[in-house]
Amino acid sequence: MLLSEQCYKKIDRELAKYPADQRQSAVMAALAHAQVETSWLSPEVMQEVADYIGMPAIAVQEVATFYNMYNTKPVGKHKITVCTNLPCALSGGERAGKRLQDMLGIGYRETTHDGQFTLVEGECMGACGDAPVMIVNNHRMCSFMTDEKIDALVEELNK
Image (tube, rainbow, N blue to C red; front, side, top):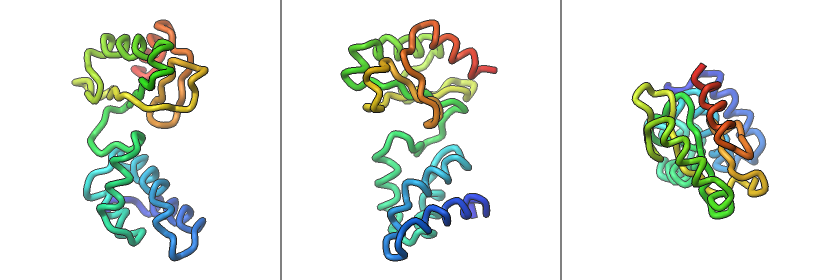
């Protein structure tokens, strides 16, 4: 078993929300719980989730590779997703992404040598009025990201 008993209990709570013949409806939540525990979704973890839910492994992989919040490759301790969709890009997203690339010395889809940061581009995060927008580790949205706020965010995450 690659996932802990505690993780399986969380997945069981998600499965309980759906009729027995629709267990696959819990796949996104199950993948999220697995990723919190393992930090990324290896093929083996996806297979384990598929077996547990009772769906084809390829279907689980399709979900995991479609959505940006799932990591199908190892990532740094802090994954920063920068919205580069057109409204954000025009409202400072391009500048914010460039600032992070310069500060961290990496491009998009890369991880710093010390394993602390991974930088990725993201599609619409539903907060166009707050542009530029970033999401840290899939759970924390940062809005109106000026150079000063970006500097403070990186400093905070480095602690």
